Image (tube, rainbow, N blue to C red):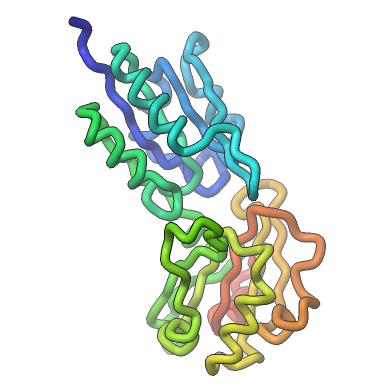
Length: 248
């Protein structure tokens, strides 16, 4: 009987290929199979051995190269054939990356695996734009939420009514298409319409650009026009620090 291979769920970081961890890079350089996401920087794939099999498993809104069930089955199949598999995921595997689903599938199949945390875009992208998520005297709490509507109803909806006044800084991932609705929800439940907002497109990469506005601008649909995913939205008074910190 052949020995089982292994699977590493590796966070590739927020976009800049230099922000992958040392452990993640080392596993990538030793991989026999690399299953990678849409937002993984192409330069990271150059770290894999020349004879490694590269499998694209990217997802965009409404378009999936592979379904999650197929990805889970692929990881299990390759590991059962004795191969060293790296599942290379944008950001951190356990922050809206479905890494938990893949880890559960591997555990239930008896496949040895490890999780290598990555630098999440929720923290790195605001930093690259000159926005600290917390700042003494300005913000002492942060919430990271998905702005993506779960049409299948698998995940519970974000409780915007409770969130509006509960934290100082709100970071919204995967929410570009729903920002107007989100802003209206927050204002309706007590968030100041004058609250500063930053929308950061392709953060940490050479294509990064940032648009600043107010929550009211978002609610009226007059901010973020022309931006394309991935976009990280930061809502809170910390956004006003960006000018002093020289953000891009």
